[in-house]
Image (cartoon, one colour):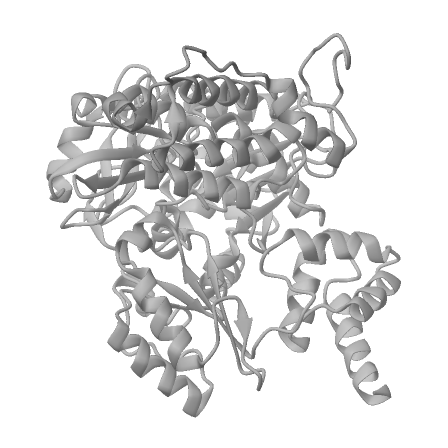
Length: 616
């Protein structure tokens, strides 16, 4: 036992030393420790706390928060089977059964010999090639019962997660540093991001010949809005960060696309990594930043060696580091931060918390990150697509970019199209494109439902297929899921609520408990046991959750309920039973949240004469 303990202590010390005992790098440290020890046990937490001058409770809080960490031993090979709605409709249940039968373990279990763990995981960014799974960090796609049988038997023989990759994917997926079977599935290339040939560093070279203020003006004149879905002006955000007080300023690229059905940043990271870093560098020059962070979701760990090589080559070419591209005095560098499995970290303040080595919980706003973000300093947070667009704007000019799209939504948008269609994949389209045109391009199979914007987006039917993908009509971070007439609408809504319940950080009582109540009522309707009052209950509770949650998850989690009621009223009406006693039930939000108050020992943010206004 002493020998084992000494071995663990050595691993802990080495991991902490590799990251200079920096508490902001604790996700990296935990990843190293778990990779070498198979888990992060209570005893290991004590050792980590000692090394980092922290407390065990803080380490334990991180391990329990991020799904890729575990206090209990995992198998040498962990198989994480994607369980998003597209994979479910693609037959993931049959694939899961074969995995379970061949490994001799149930889902969520580890084999007695400690070789294999089998579990479900939310969307892994492969909805265009479902069903898919992660075998440790190796991605396997388009799984079938037969391919799984062959795969498991091979794994049992050699215990090598990379062996299932027989045929490599296209583009940089075939690069030895990626070595993946993933396909880009680029179906439509536009002029901004996915044109066949893009000039190298043209945007950065032009930016460095301009004053920083002129760069900001060019971005503002282009009308570029953040491509994550919220649509905040990029120029305004950068200008706020430049004007804010602070000794340091940070540029953070959000590559944590965890929204179900979204995978466009995966393609940009694979094929346009240099363009992304160029955009980050332009932002750094514009706002006066010296340090950047690329936050990559844990599911994309297979891209890490390639992305590190991109940074290394840029430093060698003088495009990162000191005196960038010969511009005396301009210094900027980027480090990569790998996430650990938490959807909420896609929200910018949660992402900043994660970068700081904390649980990925939202921060109160104001102040906004552009004023006080990473380590209390002004911070620009944009996603991969936004930084890529910024590079092209500096290259071709704001007038060129503004000439694409609509007056309020300029430029192109990458859509991640998946579901019931012949050609799932990436489509670069001008903003303002109609839903029906996207469906035609993708070869949608008898489309009846389209979910625009992922789990927290809008669910629309055929009567709305004339609507446009743009910020003034149907905004989206990129997810575009299409479902045909064979699909059960309420089962889709139920899945999204299940997803939000799993991914809620748990801070806000209405969000943490309210989504559970929503799902219970949806399931009641699915069972044909609901009354007209249940619809009012759903609407009232949805509004309460949206009004009282402090981050985007709670603001959008009820949208599948509200939009499905609005666009598919006949579906609900067909399942509603009329009361025979003449009474009508009413909705009492305080009563509904009473149990959650007792559990949480705090009040909701709703005013009432008993509790008054809470500070939840």
